[in-house]
Length: 354
Ligand SMILES: [Zn+2]
Image (cartoon, rainbow, N blue to C red):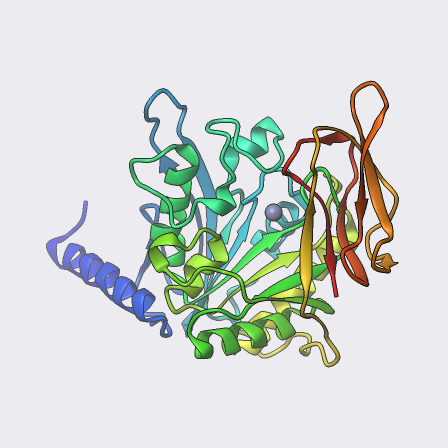
């Protein structure tokens, strides 16, 4: 049972967290951090679930998370995995980090969202939720009275992004995407937030960084998870490591190195890898989309360099007749290419970066 003093303290703590979260400053380690009704005391690790109640005939969802709280004050770094449910490398990386990240020597707090998109994860779907056929990373900041994906987005915005000072949305190639590692640095919005995001990208340490100046700046229509943080004044990063439904040690190691680099950069740990010294900036990129529904046959591999007009792959109808050849729009490198046969008109077949 709560004593009155403790209850008042708890409410004050929640208010303090809310105020700190909304201005993007450092959180006091003295204040309790409450997510989904779970409190992590300074120096403690706590896990729980954010529950999305069923609505309008859907089954609802749960969002499992862990809070690793340092003993002393510092930033609140949110690490989010499984925004796309068939992107397994980040999910497994956070399963490991849940026990490998120690509170000793940690300043501030790390929030891990283990599987953001549980309906998609358990149903093994790429891109879209089986509940509403929506892409979770296109419905932010979400809607409390919306479809299941919109309610998941709203809960992540309210419970996680609002509590964080910095956010990393950890992706990989989806279950059908053969992808080389890279991160997205979002340059739109407040220049100070963008500069801080650039420093996070360098600290994470993936060599290839896509410079992305095309994200919306309206916090009420932020669309993407990391952009929801950025439009709320919090530096954020989207990373891509792994793909094709494979869990590989090399891709997991990139995330572990990346998070270690960001923790050091933010002053949350004394030790950690140095920022990447010679990044490859990708200033131009294009997602090539299918003009037909049918079967896709790739002609290139991830990380391959291509010249303008080179064949990326072709699409046939279901009787084997070639209906489309996909060509490189400019000289560049294949960041990802679809590696399984199904293709639907309008969906990506590859991403090329320059
Ligand atoms: Zn993704």
